[in-house]
Length: 206
Image (cartoon, rainbow, N blue to C red; front, side, top):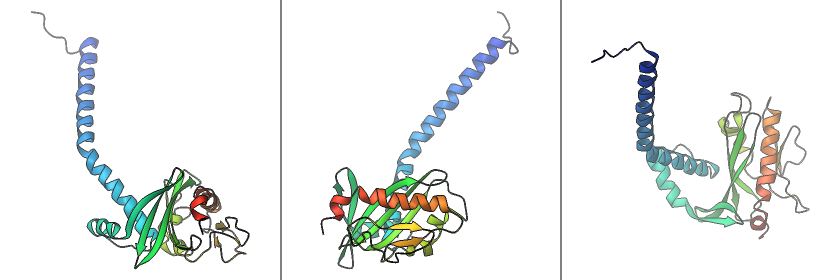
């Protein structure tokens, strides 16, 4: 019987191919095993963001799950757009998910609105990759997010007025931009107006 030449190109190629197949199989197995846990973590993160927009923060996983079940009464649609109907101490709130583009990638938000469908109750913003200390402040700065509380979505003429600007002239509907993050702030402003316009049928009910 011929001795196996472990230094030959054919042996090295075959060995490498088998090793790649084994590693790929193991990675696929681990991915499938962990996927339910990953999906659950993503779902929990979304629930927490919705609660943040309702000014409910500082809850761990189990507390957040329980609070979400308590305050979120239903998921409904305005056209193709999903939104959430909530109850906070007997007062109805609506939470609208929004998506847009920042400086370096996608940004998103949950905007909670009072039952008048005009006054913002709370807001939470997120991002995929904005610059730490600058654009990332839309997520990291709770104080900046709280500036949206009490702002009006609509101007007196019925047009969407909520926005982020360098110099606030309309205190009812405008929030000053994040310092040093003009492009990200512009992206947030565009997301607010374009995103809320997608819910205009619902928002114009009252």
